[in-house]
Length: 447
Image (tube, rainbow, N blue to C red):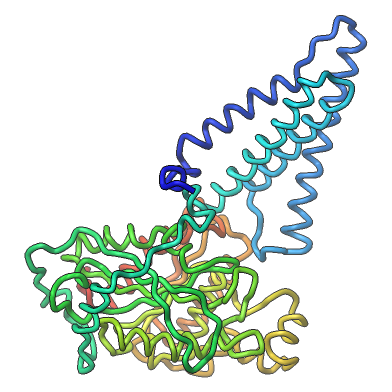
C-alpha cells in the first residue's frame, strides 16, 4: 500500500462521508423502481419492506448472538455498533432483492452496492470502537520502522545504574537548547532469554527529554494493548505518542519512556499474563522486559519511577502484574480491564491456562493478588472505564475499591460518552497519566 493510501483517514475523514453518501444514493436507486402497473408497484413496495425488515432483524439477531449470547469479543456491543450492523444487513437485503427478475445492469449495480453497504457498516463499527484511524493501520503499512541505532546507542551511553528515582525531576530538570518538539517511536526486539516467550516485535517511545545529549534518567511506562491486538495499536489507535508529546510540551520535554511489549504472541492468543502452557507471559513481562529496559534505556530504577498500564486484556495484566510486583512497578493504569483473566468460559480458562487447577486461577485474579500483597506502601493506581460500557463498569468499580482497600491510592475515572473502545483509551491517557506523572516525579505533586 502506498504512503498516500496508508495515511487516508477512515475515522472523521472525507472517506467515510463519501462512502456514506454513495451508500445513500445506491439505497435510493435500489429501492425505487418504476412500474406502469399499480399492482406491480405495490408488490415491489412490499418486497422492499420485507427485505429491509428481514435484513434489520438478522442484523439485530447477529449482534445479540455474537455480543450477548456467545460473548465472542467479551465486550458489550453498543447502540452505535448495533445500528451500523443492522443498517448494513437491511441494505444488503435490499440489494439481494434486486438480483431477481431485473435487468443485467441493475443486478451488476446491486452486487456493487453490497460491497458498498458492507464497507459502510464496517467503517461505522470501526468508528464506534475507534480501532483503525487510517487505511494503513489495518495492514502492515502501519508497521513502525526500527528505532534508529544512533538513538539507542545514545540511550545506552546515558544509562546510569546508580540512579534510583526521579522524585524531583520536575523541579531540577533544565531543558537544553535545541530540545526536540516531538518524541520518536521505533520498533525493537526484546529477547525472551529467561521466559522463552514467543513475543512479537516491541515498540518504544522516547520523549523529547530522552533525545538530548546526556539525557536524564527518566521514568518508564510499560504499556500493553488489548486482545486481539498488537503493540502498534497503542500508538495507531490510542495515539499515545501524540498525547505524550502534548504533555511533554507542558513539562519541559519530560515524559516517561514508554515500552510496549507483546504479551500475546498473536492476535488470537491470550496467555492471560501468567506462566502457563500457553506461554510464559508473566516471566517475559516481569523479567525479560525489565532487564532489556535497564540495559538499553536511560531509565531510573526505583519502583516509583516505573508504571505498568494496559487496555482491556492489557488492563487486566496491568493490575495483575502491578499488584504482584510492587517492587518493580510503583503505579498502574488499568483501562477497561477485566476482574479476572479469562479465555472463554471459566472451565476453558482453568483447563487451558491453569492446568485444570481452579485454585491457581483464583490466585491469579486481581482481587486475590491485591489481598495477598496488602498493605501496599506508596503505590498509586488509576482505573478508567467508558461511561457507556455497561459490561466493564461494575468490574472497574470493584477493582478500584479493592485496590484502595489494599492500600493503593486509586482513582476511578469515567470517560464521558464512550464504550469499550479506543476512545476510552485516549481519554484514559489524557486524564489518567497526570496522576501517574506526579507519582513518577515529572509533575509537581501540588499540581
